Image 1 (cartoon, rainbow, N blue to C red):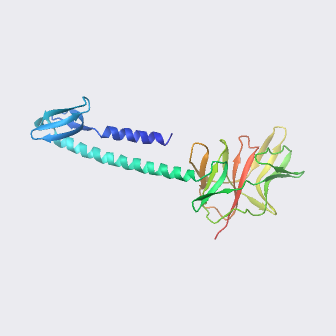
Image 2 (image 1 turned 90 degrees about the horizontal axis):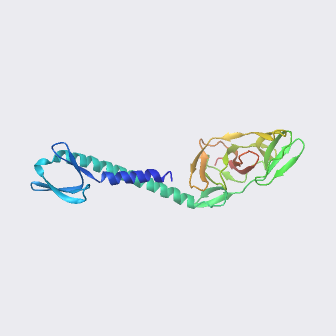
Image 3 (image 1 turned 135 degrees about the vertical axis):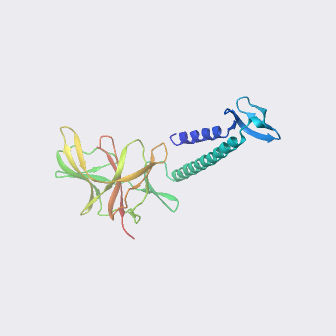
Length: 257
């Protein structure tokens, strides 16, 4: 709808600009759809009265009428070009979005085909225990500190483009972002966690990556990419619940060619 309103405004402008002002030598004018000079008369179609009328040519300021008509035509052509470009861009976004499945998840496009990144299994590791998290399962409330980890020293999803673009289809409105992971032996640390069981708060510490985002559709499809080229390393796209106690992780790695 936000993209539609400027387009409707532009179309309304074109409809208004299609009319001309037929200026008279006394400074007044008639709003006309078109006019014709016929010998000593000017024949015009009156917008106000929706009919053809005539007026003596010597009463018409033809130079001013023609000058303003030329300016109007230039503006009409300019706006028509803007509308054409906006329509072309909107169709391009629609075609791009049509490639992405509607199933929630993270995707990238290769060779014109969308490919999905598998959702990673998460593990919370504290000095007391290690708990495997199912998708969007709450983080266990244990006092002290811990780490949110995913298995493997390196991701199997490898990209060579440091400005790789991804598509995130949300199931519902949630906060999301991109993090840099910290490899530690056989795992990669997503976040360091501090648990406060009395207040039931979890304080995460992570390494966020600044991203750019574009809302592709109204049903939660976003295109995201890093603001700056990513350095070689391990990364993840993450989606949080409102209370930060649930997280979904899609991991990937950037490696130079």
